[in-house]
Image (cartoon, rainbow, N blue to C red; front, side, top):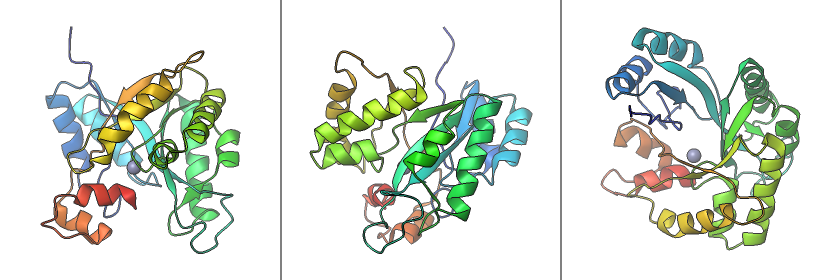
Length: 239
Ligand SMILES: [Zn+2]
């Protein structure tokens, strides 16, 4: 059996202060590592997509176009200090041309109408443009992991049901990550597994890790963390 591993959660240098990996290097490294494909999920925008497409073609791997979008806690046009400043993460991957078009619409609206600290979508907008997309529950800053951290298991259960209903059973995955600098994940992962396995309608998993390929300096600039602090990656995704 060949290597079927593919990175599905990747930030390039187009994730400002959140990643520094250059797209040609990323694609070459993926190809050399035996990956047949690679996803690009920059934060909140898709500026790198054309370069990613070309770099993937040059490297001979399949590009998977995606985005780790920000999701507002209320409607995207609500922008009250403190209440709306926290945005959840959500990973979207285009499955086909319709999905790619929907991703463009979501990201455009997030930047033009939903911008409040971050370009944000909301659930209503997502529901209008979900066709052709695969959805992953994201890192520890996703809505579902955040609810688990807060002990809101019923709410997490409801949200899993909502995403599964919207995207379809084959297109929504609970994302599991393990980062050395994110000890909370060791507590959250078993609870995510338990939630996702609940009958009568279990949800599949996907194992990822937030790949930033960046330097500690850039990430610390974003996170206001100390470069000698080994938890800087944790802080990165708690923003
Ligand atoms: Zn994230």
